[in-house]
Amino acid sequence: MTGERIAHAARGWIGTPYRHQASVKGAGTDCLGLLRGVWREVLGAEPEPVPAYTCDWAEPGREELLWEAALRHLVVKPRAAEAPGDVLLFRMRDGGVAKHLGLAGRVGAGASFIHAYSGHAVVESPLSLPWRRRIVARFAFPPID
Image 1 (cartoon, rainbow, N blue to C red):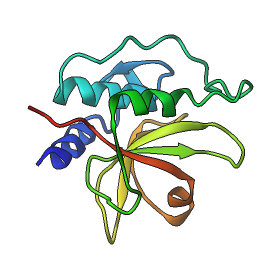
Image 2 (image 1 turned 60 degrees about the horizontal axis):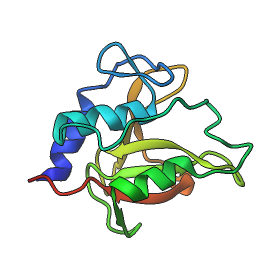
Image 3 (image 1 turned 30 degrees about the horizontal axis):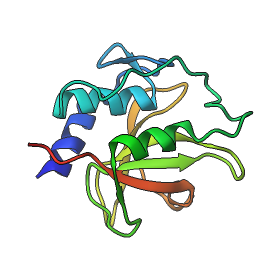
Image 4 (image 1 turned 60 degrees about the vertical axis):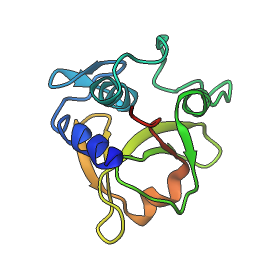
């Protein structure tokens, strides 16, 4: 199953230190770098080069850069159609741009997600109500041939 494979790959990154703009398992990654690294493990080459980005993710200009990139390369899912391996896009504050990503680990009771957390490392966190409220979009990886 594709989603389980993606969640398994993401768990392999747990403990990787947080490093802005990095995407190297065991050495450093941020939330986008985690997604990129899992993409490489599961699908192969990344679909487009990633330009340098700031920690604020274009918040001053109100650009939804992560959302736009997700729409180019991922499959939009209904919010209610939860599955392991889903890509979750979060808005960290009301009125801000969506600038955090995670991958669904478990769904249903005890739901979790895997993400690179600033100041920490890649962790698997409970998908608690405060996190659920921040989800603005849910995507799936493209089908694996």
